[in-house]
Length: 325
Image 1 (cartoon, helix red, strand yellow):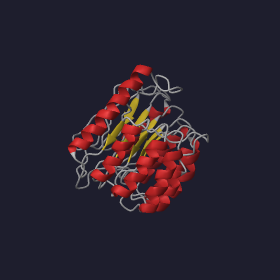
Image 2 (cartoon, rainbow, N blue to C red):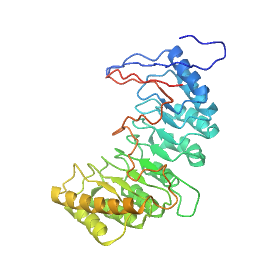
Image 3 (tube, rainbow, N blue to C red):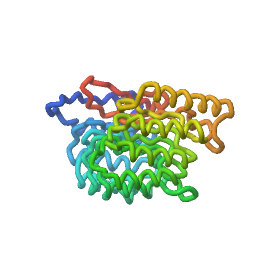
């Protein structure tokens, strides 16, 4: 690939590292530098380092590119890239300087409460961040308190529109109940993924009240959360008898009968079709789809809508990603 001195990359950039689960190779400094240079061109919209083995210096380069970028919209650092508090501090400094990022994926990093507390001032103050994935990050009640602060009450400043908290088993009843209260009063949240947490029927009942109170929540994922027909019936009664913004409720891998799941899904589909006939909700405009698809590690779907992207991949299927500049 030929480049003139000081010029941005103008051809496709391919950066791939297939790392076996037994502990594979690190990405080279040259590969990381090339990706960061592409971000510096101010045309890259996505940087994905999912599962990559980065040295501390290379992680610092990624953070520096984030801090300097005015165009980067999505950053994927899932599956152990951030690790502990020291890298969380570097990321926090970069987020404090960045103004463009709207999606941050940190799924599968052992942040714990201390790591999220390190990140929280930068996350809360970021002017553009609307989507955050904290699934499988070993969070507890203190971290949930911080997350609730990113869901400001109706009429306050804008907050998160999409939040993933999958597989954080250390959160207690107190933490989840606080989240349910925050969701009920959030003026922005549209997608909430709580799959693979041991919530049980009591927390699910509180979430049903939160859904009924929310004017924006459209997607709630409760897959594998220890629910029974009892909580499913609460959701069914809510959908049948009260107006709600909810369009998708995921209840698979629970002790919930298929008949109840189908009935709830049918009612939500009917409501969705009525909303489609009326057009998009006031103030949302065409940029927001009527059927939002959660962007997260668990069910992340490929997209062709954002051609300018840089990906540092470490998937075992040797996925190659391209940068269109």
